[in-house]
Length: 206
Length: 206
Image 1 (tube, one colour):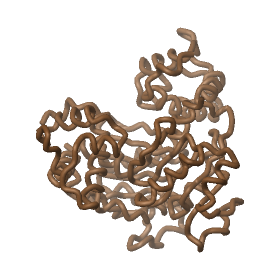
Image 2 (tube, each protein chain N blue to C red):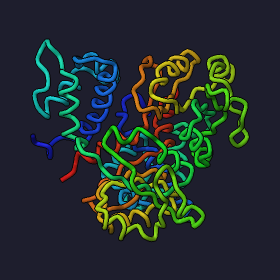
Image 3 (cartoon, rainbow over the protein chains, first blue to last red):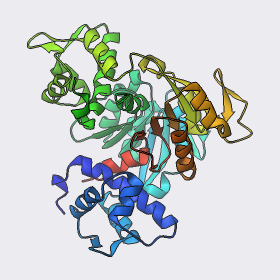
């Protein structure tokens, strides 16, 4: 496996393949093809074959892909054959919705710590987690060895919190705040900003 | 302007440029450079200059970009120099958080219709909007000429709703459901699935 050389855009499609394969498995399917996957995902079969071939030989010409096997391989490649503890920072409307979302665990992630700086929220519970004071963020994340976080704070607070996440040794930040944060190159950030997605579409207005 | 030839990945960066410029303007800045923008965004200055040059001459060598002018141009290019009415389908935890989010209007979008199929929710209000029965979706969206929608329904319901959005003439769908939907080529879909973003990062575990 020559992981270092694979373009991030290819890496970005692997979770989509895994998601589609998992759905197929839940429908009772055992075998699929790049055609069928491509039709589900709106990605060309040639692209899918090319992407997957960078990681190994997962299918045979003419017989297709074994869904369970390929899904297992992708889980291993994406390192979600383990469950990652995730800390969520910021429990406003959005953070609360994310904390309630039931779809993380079966896909490799478990929200296991919540932080906020609002005294009215600190000490209250969401599901079985107590919201902790974000003042404890650095020591607490370090102690627990948590390396994945979701950031659902206002844009104005995002950089200050990101700095503390970096200080705490966090390696992966999913940022819901509508802003960009500066982190060292050893830390990865992905962004979710619905307006960015909407604008990327309205560009194509005819 | 040769819009048709510009790669979607370039288009996808324009909203980030616009967001950063808007932040700079709110900080009272008037002029910026590709270096400063790049440092905020984690994108190389050369990439930024190349992206922007595809749409026109926005800066002069050595004097940088006029923030207000460039932001205005980008708003026009992205067609958010108007406000788009947006319908939100699915008002669960996540849909509710999205409906409450105050950041849409100043960036070109206004949530102006809410739909759900839960009788307990239909007729109730979020902010100043009454949740409508999704059974009315097609006729209602058509009548109001709404072409932008956000889909925050469970994965199992997403395709059926997407089919009705297409029937209603919707052109842009932001899908929060963790699944892919099939739509005609004339309809654009963008996806927000936090697990896809998380997995794209954990791939890089060392």
